[in-house]
Structures are given as structure tokens and as C-alpha cells.
Image 1 (cartoon, rainbow, N blue to C red):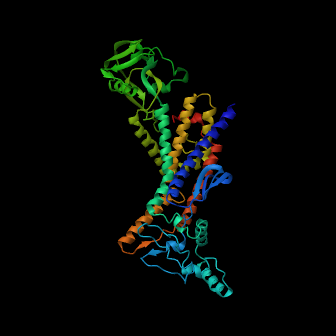
Image 2 (tube, rainbow, N blue to C red):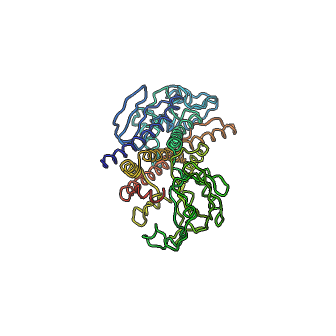
Image 3 (cartoon, rainbow, N blue to C red):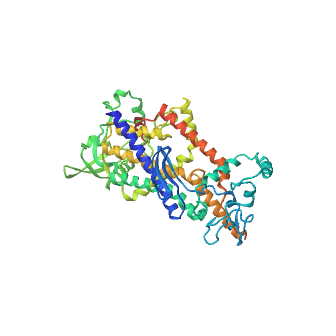
Amino acid sequence: MTVVLYIVGIVLFLIGISISIALHELGHLTPAKKFGVKVTHYMVGFGPTLFSFRRGETEYGIKAFPLGGFIAMPGMYPPEEATKSRHEGTVAVQNGGAAGGVVDGGVDETTGRLGEPGAALGSADDVTEGRLGEVVDDGDAAPLRRDRKKRKGRLFEDTMADAREFSNQEIEPGEEHRTFYALSVPKRLVVMFSGPLVNLVLGILIMGISLLGIGVITPTTTVQTVVECAVPASEAAQRPASEQNTCRDDDQLTPSWEAGIKPGDEITAIAGTETKDWDQLSSVIKDHAGERVDVDFIRDGKAQTVTVPIIATERPKVDENGKALLKPDGSPQTETQGFFGVGPVQERQSLPLREFPGAVWDQVSGVFHAIITLPVKLVDIGEVAIGTKDRDAEGLVGMVGVGRIAGEIVSTDQIDVVDKAQMGLGMLGSLNIFLFAFNMIPLLPLDGGHIAVGLYEGARRRINRWRGRGLVGPFDTAKLLPLTYVCIGLMLCMTALLVYVDLVKPITLDAIFNSGG
């Protein structure tokens, strides 16, 4: 049964990530179709196609590996002749009508579109080089070969030409205005940003369901446990494990124990300060170390008051997440603070709406910080892979690792169903926010790279208009292919490294719990 539940967890994770990717691509698809771009494919996943159907001019389908997706829009790499075009208010007929005697593929000044219906399919140079598919006789072939020899040394040139050709192969004559590069810059930015934006919105919605709907485990002012004795943290650390939960005869009794506080008592005020929540109660106690104060509480529906001395004791120092801070030698950091000696009842409560924006900001900024520090984290993963470093439960984890954790969440019997659902939603929400942040990296082939190209192109056009040079054609994205291949190679290496360590040295659910994450 445990194995079946483990598999169910992995399947649920794959379904969740597939839906997230599908909605991401839908974010691109919707404005693209709205703006009239010809979208030929909408696919979720990579690899062999498992299922597909065609509606209109678009093929919709699901592929074998649900860890990505794409939509195909002709013109992601503009033709070279379009990138060299310039609109100066003239009409040009190229080579006596080699491309049908149509107007130059320039930019319409009012719409900002490139290659409106009837735009040129090639320049005179293209015709000379036979790029329009002409039959060239032997007499023409010799200069063509000489021209290619001169160009032979240019690395990636053939690859760029192939990319341009492949990108525009499904555009029929007269459909040039329906390419991606024919869109105005603002519309291109909308198309590219809408995909990541969907993931951001989806991540926030999932966080809302988890934090506002299901709620968060919150300590209350109702007493769950009463501590018998107060032992300084430094002294407690030196005691044997068998004495960690027992008191010695000479140990100081806690104020709560001496005052007769019992589990179930609800503390309403300390030192005249109303305690509406546990954080406020703890703060008041810490601030009154060494003082005698009145403690108001309710027991069995009746209000009572006792006067107790808040003792000053050495306690472990913790961070904002409640995790103990350590010294360089590994021993706990300590501080002197007031100590009363009670533990709270934990209840699931909806996060106050006013705190939700802060929680979203913490999540989004945390993900961006993780991406900024990604190179450092990858070095750590590399050290884990070669065995010189232990795996950090709060460190980087890949899709395989996330899938394994999802399987553990579903199959474990140490977590109730509500907590399992909330942990699953938390993972999916974090994943969507990561997809948003990662796709905003301004490098091709990521969406952020296309956005950066669009912003550059918009700035370039504006500068050219200011200088009176007219409107230029789209930026030749194919020139960035070498950098694109480097980025793809790095991402593949990162993926392979994470897959290896997730399989060989995986992060387990117990490790996450023990780390305080």
C-alpha cells in the first residue's frame, strides 16, 4: 500500500506540474491569437507526441515527458531581409519583381508592423544567392560557390540561416503579417510576459488557498504543557541524553509550575498587557525578566489572577523561523531572557488577510534570491555529487527530488490528510513562482530573453526615430543563437547534475522536518 501511495504522490506531482505548464503556454497562446499571430502548435511536454488534435490552424497535444511545453509561432527568428529593412516612405520593387514585384518589407509607421500583406520575400542579394529556391545553371553556380567560400569561416551562419528558415516555414505567401516579428513591440512583450505572469498568479492563488483557506498552524495563548524546571541552555547541553527531560533536585522551578498553571488555562494578560496571541505573550514575558508580574488567565470559564516572578534565564537564540542559531564551533547561541515555563496549544488558523501580501512577498523574493545565488548553490551540489559535502535539506533540489518528496508526503502515515494537502499545495505554489522567476531571467531561450530583445528593439526604434533615420526592421534574434546554445547547454548540465544527486543522495522528508524547513 505504501508503494502505491508513493506512486500516487509522484503522479499527482506530474499532473500538477503539467497543468502549470499548460496554463503557462495558454498564457502565451491567448494574446498571440488575439493579436492575429498564426500559432501552429500548442504542446505540453517534450519528446514523442502521445495525443493530439487539430482545431483550426493549431495542433494541440500532449507529449511524453511532462517537464516543459511550447507553442509554435512563425517568425520567432525574423528573415534576414526583414531585419535589414528600413521604412523611409518609399516603395521598392526588387530585381524586377523577383518576389512578385511587391513592396519592401518595412515597418508601417502607424501600426509598427513588419511585412504587411504583400511584403517582400527576399532581397536582391537573396535572389543572387538562390535563396528563393531558383534553379541555378552552371554559369551561376561558380560565383555562388566562390561567395560561399568567402563566407565559410563564419561560425554558426548556416545554423542561423536554418533557424530563420525553420521558424518561417509554415507561413504561406500573404501571411507575413501574421508572424511573431510582425507584431508591434508592446504586443510582443504582452505575448512573452503573459506566460510567466500566469505562473505568478497561479502561485499566489495556491498560496491563498493554503494560507487563507486551510490556514496555518498557529500557537495560541491556551496552555498545552507546563515546564517543571528552568535549566540554563549551556548547562542543559552538557547533560546526558537521559537527563534532558528530567529535573534535578537543585534545579530552579519555573514560575508557571510554582503558580499552579495547568494545561487548558487560557492566559489573557501579563503585567497588565493583554495577550491576544502567542507572539505577544512571549514578548511580554521576555521584557519582564526578573520582575514580579500579575498573570491573568481563564480556567473552566472563570477568570483568575496570580502574581509570579518572571525568572531571568539563559535560553537558546533562534532566528525568525524558530531555528536555533549556532556558534562557529557548533554549540548553540544563547541569550538571557524572561522565562515563564508554558508551551502553547497549536491550532490551525486562517492567516490574517493583512499578512498575506507579506507572505507572498517573502515567497517571491526568496525564490528570486535563490535564483541569484544559483551558481553558488550549484557548486555546493557539485561537491555533494563528488562526495566532499553532505546534502543540505534546505538546498537546491531538482524535479526528480521534488517528485520523490511528493511521493513521501502521500505515503507517510506521520502526517494527517490536511497537512499532506497543504504541503502538496505549498510545493505546487512554490514551483509556479519558481517558473515565473526562472523564466524572467533575461537570457534566450527563456521568456525573459525574448522580453529583453523586445525592450532592446523598442529602444532602438525610438532612438532611430529621434535621429530621423526612420523605422528599422526587427532585431535579428538568430544572431543570439550561439549564446542561446550556451544557455541550453548549461541548463542541461544543471538538470543532469540535479537528477544525479536526487537519485544518489536524495533529500528526504525526515531530513526536511529535522532541519526545521
